[in-house]
Image (cartoon, rainbow, N blue to C red; front, side, top):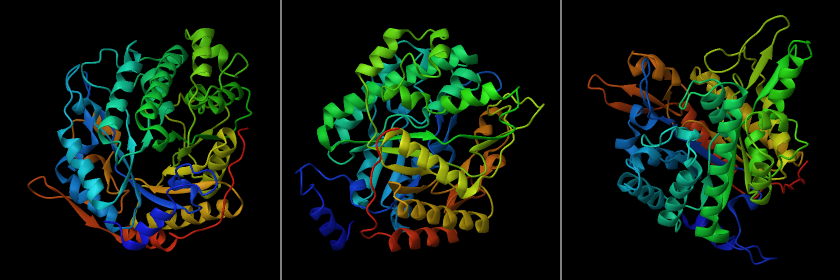
Amino acid sequence: MTDDRDRRTHDRRTHDTRTGAPMKWFDDGELHFALGIEDTFVPQSRAGERPIDEYELTDHYAQVETDLGLAKDVGAELVRWGVPWYRVAPEAGRWDWSWVDRAMASFEQLGLRPVIDLLHYGTPLWLDGQFANPDYPQHVAEFGTRFAERYGSFAVDYTPVNEPMIHALFSGEYAYWPPYLSGPDGLARIATSLAKGFVLTQQGIARALGERATFVHVDAGMRYVGDVDAPEHRETVERLRHQSYLVEDLVTGGVGPGHPLAGQLAAGGVSDDDLAWFAANAVQPDVMGVNYYPRHSTEVFEAGVHHGGGFADSRPFFDAGTEGLAEVLTAYAARYGAPVMLTETCVTGTVAERLEWMGDSVASLQKLRRAGVPVVGYTWWPLFDMYEWTYRHSNGPRADHLLTMGLFDLVEGADGHLGRRRNPLADRFRQLATSTRHPSLPVSTPAPA
């Protein structure tokens, strides 16, 4: 439970003294520390594939109360936490909230603030065509709205779609995840379907919760370096740089006839009426979240070398460190005129490597804040180790796909039980989270670029 000091601070800051409007957690001038629990759900499969459910792989379903207790113990204020839609809605029109009830009760008992990650890949098994289903936007909006109506007395912070551009690429361009569309037309179709579902979900939650609702939009920071001006790469790089913002531009009403990707969208079947709908129904982030991994968020182009891009045929990566981190956070803050939050970061490696990145990345955010960039949150992802997405295309045991990323190691016993073993990152995170939890430098929100 929250201590008296936290409760007094909360009571003081519930309303803006100037306007009388409810205060939001990100308005208090502090840098808020969060953790995430990996929550990829792709329940569909085909020949050569198996479903992937990170909660099942990591035994989070069975250990949810103690897992959330670990987050509280290491000083997290917020937890980015996803909902397994395919389990909540096992059949069309049937809802099973029993496990989510259990998890949300634990959040409330612990005094942890959930940032609800409504869609972290994957749809229910009964939804034919997945994101390409014409009724997908209405179905996902119903799911999100029902969640808010059920838990809105406590859960008020929502991410309608995590990394919608990664969704669109994997499901619409690379044919790697359902519905296995490919090419620019597939990307346009999936991106706009995701964006419409995103808008309808946010609108539904806003109607349910009113001004108490907070929306943390989240996408992946993507950077492209190297021989980007080589004739064979120039057009591709230009497209990719605009494309990384495409879904967020759609949902915020920023895609019109003059948008650099308007032609690609039109070729993929997106009409002027579709774009007009987004402009008329634009929704905005209260906080713009950016996911950044120093060793994977920057792709390298090499003159004379073709790399298709994508999970199965990726370009080389360059470790851009804190320079890349500062660039993507600053760019998102300027583009959307909202406070920014680092919503995922880590390195996969030894404890020493992870400790170094944790210290460097927090220092980088503090430097940005001193420079006036409105950075309001830091998230280490994940709380405990996870399993790589390659598990889906393998017949090997989950241990073959373990990624050492967390504050707690996953330790598999002979009986298959997964223990959580605390490592030095937990103590370092707690030190950083608790030592910076005090009123800090004021930050200003820039106007959208």
